Length: 366
Ligand code: CP
Image 1 (cartoon, rainbow, N blue to C red):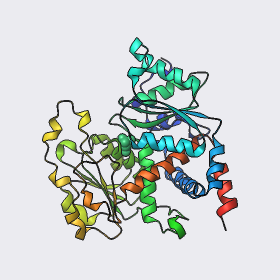
Image 2: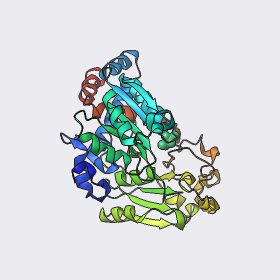
Image 3: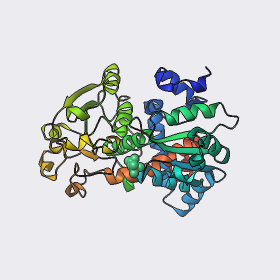
Image 4: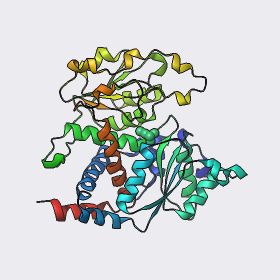
């Protein structure tokens, strides 16, 4: 069997990460485990620079030249608002023209073409494929298959089943970094601290069993020794054993909790998630009582002053709308940070990050 036929999920993580890299940097972006602390910081700094440069017409024009010779395909055959639109906006920021497939019933798959062949065809027209797919291993497996094509292009995972959502985790950690780093004039972060999460408690609440954003963010937070993680969920929706095993192997202090009101006062960050009942065809999870996993404005007097409330969105009733205007609500910032982080990631994948750093240095570093 050649490597393109192997099931990647059966390989050791280090091997999976190596197969997704070229020249010691991620080529395909599939797993949160591809990002160590140094790379997370590189991307946070790059996102901050893109944000600053894009503020002026001259800067925005400069950014638009960087990838104006490239084309992106947004292959999103699962519903998405934020990931799809923020990648589309990120492409616009960098001058990448982009096209989309959002419904496979409009492609030749209805004539019996396999999904793999569809993606191989797309790889002949475009320079990167950004993909949301219901299949857990599909993005990784197609990335391996493309490695064996004469024309091999990067695959970026914009959400794979219940498994991973690495670019959401990058924007989440960027948002957390911004919350815990001192801001300079205009709210710009001049220096991201190496480990602002040591001694901090981050709680994940809601449907942790099927929340791919939680799984990916836990992998990133495990890069920060001294962070404490709370998994707050009903038994049926508690985080899976593979993640707990990883957290344990990394010596990260953690606890399983059965009530959000009981722990809210301890938290420096709370990451809320909705019930992911689209994965539950029988509708069983709708019967679970989620009252103890709801963040309510009535709890505000127990919040720490610098608490960060995050939610990948969309939300339902688990996050009280009366919290939207509280300065500790960071979920609208998360949405915007996603655009800057995804622009930074695309710039990094296409090796134009150096041009952004040089431009920033010559125009803003005084
Ligand atoms: N957070 C997130 O992935 O949102 P969408 O499903 O709208 O892309």
